[in-house]
Structure formats: C-alpha cells, structure tokens
Image (cartoon, rainbow, N blue to C red; front, side, top):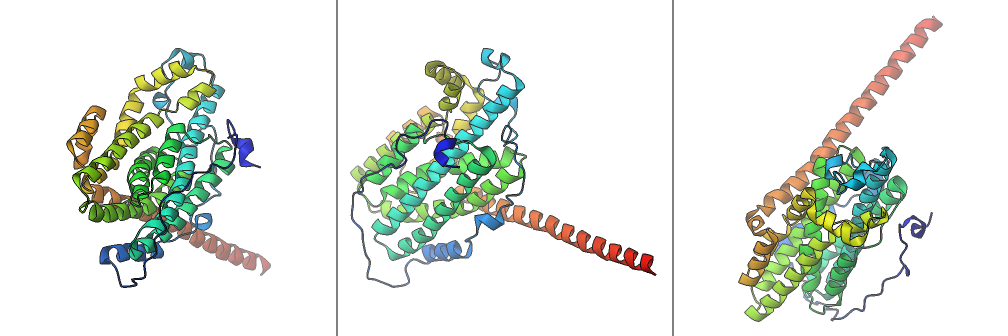
Length: 373
C-alpha cells in the first residue's frame, strides 16, 4: 500500500525541496586524524546491524494499544470528551497517538540522514567525514525500521509536524558547516533520544521496546560525535559567534517544546485547535514529559560550550536549567547496556527453545522407535 494512503492527512506534495547552501569541502590530508573520533568511527563500523534480522518482526502488535499506554497519560483522560468515548474510541485514540509519535520519529530520522550526508559534504576534517558516513547509514536504517513499524503494525502515519519541519529547514539552509551538527546532533537527536528512552523504559510491548533500544544504541554514538566535533570547534569562536549559535539553540528549543503536544491528534477527534492546545497545556503528564525531553539536550549544550547568560535564562524560564548537571556519559552508557542486555535475554530464550525442540524431537524419535519394536 502507498504510504500516501496511510496518512491521516496526506501531504500535498510528496517531495519537500530545501535549497542547499554552503560549500562542499574536500580534504587532501589523509593523516590518521583524531584518536577519539577515529575510535568512534571504528565503533560505528563494528556496530552496523540489519533491522530486517536483528528485530523480531513476527511479534504481534495490537494497533489499538501498540505501546500499552495507561489511560491517565492520555490528554483527554478526565475531561468531558473522555466521558463520552467508547472503548473503541479510546483504542482509536491510542492508535493515533502512537502513529503521531512514531511518524515524527520517522520524519526526524530522514532529516538526520540528510543532515549526516550534509556533514560528510561540508565538514572540513576527514575523520569527521568518515564517521558521518557511518551515521548516514545508521539513520537510513532507523528510517527504514520506523517506516516498517508504521506500515505493518500501526497502519497509519501523520505528516511531519510544522515546528519540526521548520527546525529542519533552518538547519539545512544555514551555510555554516557546524549547524547540521548543532541543529540535528544536539537538538533534534537529543530530544528524540529522551523521547525514545521514555517509551523504551515504560512500554511492556516487546517489539517497540526492541526497536527503540537498538536505535538508541546507535544514537548514543551520534550524540558523542556531535559533542566531540562542536566542543573542539566552539573553543575557537568569538563571543559574537557563540551568541549567534546560542540564539539558534534557544529558538530551536522553543520550537521543539511546542511541537510535543500532539494537538494534531486531538483535532482529528473533532476537538477545535484552540481547545486542543489548552488541554495539552493543562496536562500534568505532558508537563513532565516535555521537561524530561530536555534531559539530553541541556547537558549537551552546556558540554559543548554554549552556556551564556541569555541561554541560561531561557532554560530557567523553561524550567529545565537543572538538567544541565545530568551525567550525559552515564546516560549514553546505559543506552548501550540496555540494548546489549536485551540481545542477551532474547538470544538466551531462543537458545533454550531450540534445545527444548531438539530434546523433544529426540524423545519423540525414541518413542516412535520403541513402538516400532
């Protein structure tokens, strides 16, 4: 089935052209490069995987409760609208929310793929080009996986959110080579990682848990790459140049925060936009969710050296300044460990099942032989 037929509201044009600017930079210096970045490049090569085989696509998913979402985290819960909903309506609401969330993940991953390819083109350092090439492949795999999950398991997609599209456009139109790092690696990837993590750690459904855990294992490397490259580069910039980038971060954070309300879902259930926005603003769960979504962005921004007074004030106003003290390295290590543990547990179960099947076959063969005697 065409993806267009699955959209709640199909895009008018399936292609979004973003005018490219800036220079493609070749580097004729083929020395070894930076040890830390080359080690990350090696890890990127070693950790490549196939989404068609590592993920168990035979696992069943109920499209009307794909994530096991409790009633009380749904924005309409406790409102007059909820009281009028049937069980079927509530299942439809869960399906729409999951489709909306994973559609934004999908669109973001395509954006990450394009940005990673742009970094290969524009970054001046060859070691960074090498690593970005592995990331481009990672992001292609993620887009493939999220697309398959939406097509085969949910059967519904949402268009890209306007604010996410705006931030992607701003990132790609900027001619400065570091902006795809800042817009994608720090802001969009950082926020996506936090969203992935919250769903990964709360869902009791095995297929989305696998998908999110394995994607996050890759993303931990991507954020580490952005931190290394930008930390080195931003030490060389003037105060004025740093302020320009801080303004970009402030605007991007506001866009990302405002994108996370799922107003489009409520509108599809007949709720006027203004009321949908008000209900989303009043949701206690969404307040907590939106704050936690910055748990990866704020410490990363601080780590790369963008921590001027205006940026700190913006984070105070958003109620997320305290997240700057989070241990980003620990979070990334945990992302890696969770994916590896999930692999060990899955393969141990599969091995036990194979042993039991062999034992059963042997026992059955013995029984058949005894009957023949």
